[in-house]
Length: 195
Image (tube, rainbow, N blue to C red; front, side, top):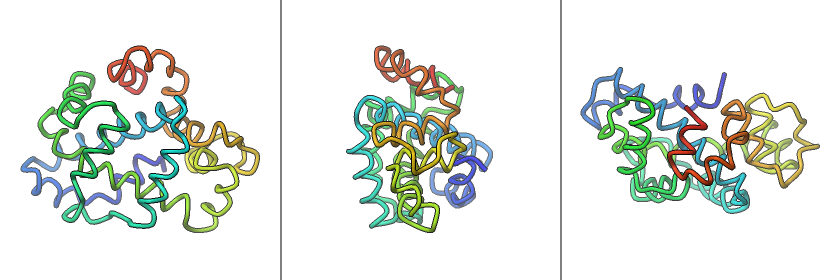
């Protein structure tokens, strides 16, 4: 199961649909695209030298887990969206909508709710269970590579590749391969490399 599917499985779509005032089908589509975009943004940030900051943020969320969508701190979620996608939730949602055809207003509502949940998910994988303990030797990147089918073992993953390898493996290495384009093309370039 991919990380996107694993996170999606943890989201109560019916409850979230009621919370944001949309159909379950539209909400599930928006959630899938939002999670993909957030993970892609994290991958690009890590590849651009932000791995240490991202690892620290993920560890903070692991220490204070967010799993209940009704109690998510959406202001924290908006800050995460801003950090990983380089745009506020409304602008990020508009860009994702342009690429996917998903309703921009719905994306703008779900992204700040989902961002802390994605961070908590990555944090739980980093700190919990035997897989997490093994992966810590390779940093967050080693963990992500092991979770999403990376070819290197967690103990041999270099700290420099860290979360970049993890998140790149999660998205089929699309973002890692297109990182220079995404850096020069801003959010649009990043989304071109994801979708």
